[in-house]
Image 1 (cartoon, one colour):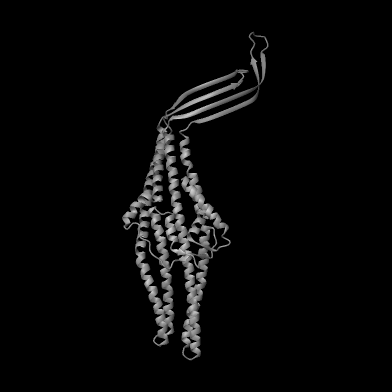
Image 2: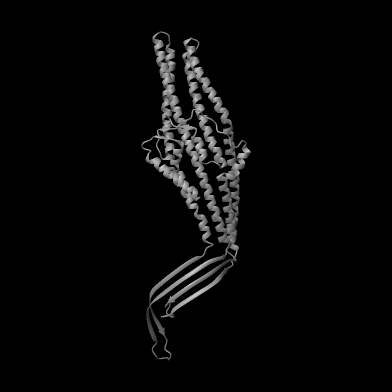
Length: 452
């Protein structure tokens, strides 16, 4: 844990430098975004504080096994009248007046010798701290997914905006061509109206895509704390990473041992088991060692002007006999909560298994899907050029060109989406397996390159 905090401190320092220079640079890479998110993401900062608090459960549980030492000091100003009956009837009584200061000092020590409750609390505290560590690990991995998803969504929205702008500009150019051809008597009014209609739709798509980019940039900024007008683009030479494991069963075996959510559910069950032990301890005897040192000066009228020192050491045995059914009730309650925790562990395993299979299948099919869409983009590009030539030859009409260009834009958009989905599935599969780390994030960042 200390090593992870040291590493977190170094990342935070790097992020501080990044923040200091944020005003001079608007572009941001994926790794820069991650470093900033470690420092600024509210959800992650909450997880850090929660984990710091969770580390104290171990100490809280251990405290019950260690000695308890206490010092008491008391002093007071006292006035008293003592009435002493006369020894002989008829004589006046004797009245004594006291005006004195009392003083009491007590140093006491208590040490548990046998107590099943404190032993169970100590073991439960260890399990609670381990649970906190597992939850923090899950939150740390969740930060990677949230960041990469927000980064990919934002970049995909920017790609869409660029595509729609290019489509709009192409339609505007096509409109000018239609107008010139119409003026020469080679075109028709229908061609101009068709192009104008497509151009109007393209203008609306550009506006909608621009709003979408703004919203997604705000979402990304909420995680990183950085404003950016430019993100790194996908590399042209996009190559799929080799699979570390091939079969789903191999991934599931890894996930069972390493997934932090499954680990947390196991520790939650362990906490519930120790809660049963705590409850049953209400019927068990308790043995304690008690030692004290007491010094008192005039602590009462009878001890007026006396300075007493008492030292004692001994054991105390407490045997519970009957508590109104309280112990049985909380034991039954703890057993039910244990069964609930076991069911939640099974549910967590099932949920992780479903997610793991989903991401495994998505990653397996990505290669085929990306390859098919890449071929479709190449074919669509050739179709656009061929259709334009056919229009010049009188074989095709203007509407065919517009449809071919629209198909090309849609195919390029789908290809970009498939690549982003592949990268997200690449990380989500490792998150579900519990093996994701910064090196995996660096692998994903390697698919991006700064825009020149």
